[in-house]
Image 1: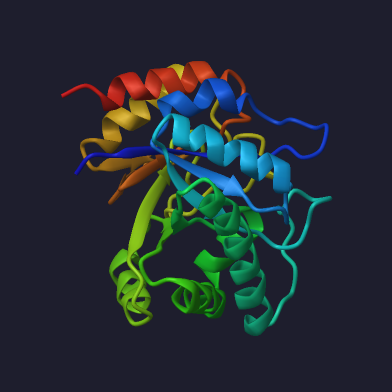
Image 2 (image 1 turned 30 degrees about the vertical axis):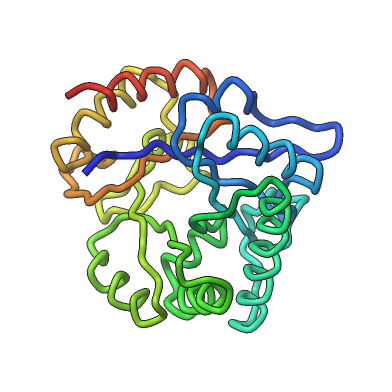
Length: 245
């Protein structure tokens, strides 16, 4: 299966910019577009969607907790009903602008703390699946690839939703297959050569944890962060590896 490259995009708002989306967009396959709760605004979403059309990039909604100040990286206690509502709200907002460009969202990837909480708490996972199923069962949900893939896929299918399993190219993993917390100084990998080697390993079906343990990984999509140091150079290097036979 071909591994697709995804990147979090459109994460500036107002006068603020976070990454050089115009330079990055031509080299990715899937753009996870912020929907206004952790970053972005209506105009930024509009510009981001226009870029995806220019470069034939798939659009994914990137919903989060309502946490603009904390960039969506803080867990917020919400009921399942609240989570379903905020996810549905953000998908709808982004897709309304998509429709104005005669395009559409094809998947959903929660952001930051909501993504992490989804992977830890089945009730949050179910709340997100419910929101997607109420909107459009053709939308796929992108989640962290783990040893629970079969269980998570079965649960998603019970809501009529298919999953996209992703691996993070520039994030370290614990021995249990979870992401190393961003509170740890070694959470993000900035060395391009190390990240490239990780992709070579992924094409063979495994990834090395922070303690050099071999983790078997099912991967549909590889995530790299557009706000990483030397992000464009890193993305170009990964694209080169992905294009190799």
